Image 1 (cartoon, helix red, strand yellow):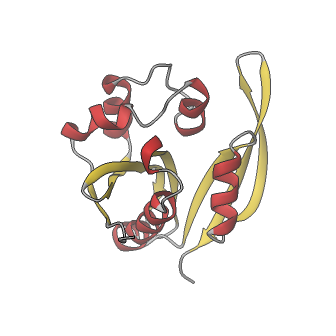
Image 2 (tube, one colour):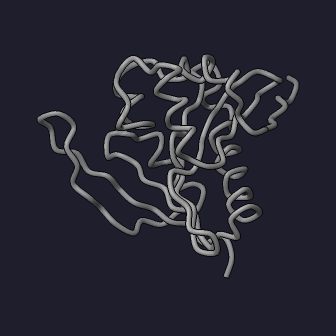
Length: 162
């Protein structure tokens, strides 16, 4: 067995079509991008990238495998991770952990952030387990609506520096 090569770089406009295929259904899209409408389009993703910072593409063996950005930032204080999406073929291969780590480093380097904040919906077991594994601690819970259904948005934080 050979080791897979993980890398990352700033996402470009040319990456957006590939990223739209990272979510396979409306539930996955809701977890990653609650304001978007199924199916995810290049236009929806481009609009999000235009108003967010740090859009980053993870590569596994040179292929687009993950995407994330910051939907909020306050330099010197925090960044809030958003739009985390992993390609179906790349799941359970360490891409999400790698990409969150890359975003932590980006938050430190470019925003001098003391912490990274993440939010995760209650039905997203993979996300909840990921953030717990990476050392994020639960800091809050908000009620949200998904159509007629009430859902819980769990909020986590990880200290990046003192």
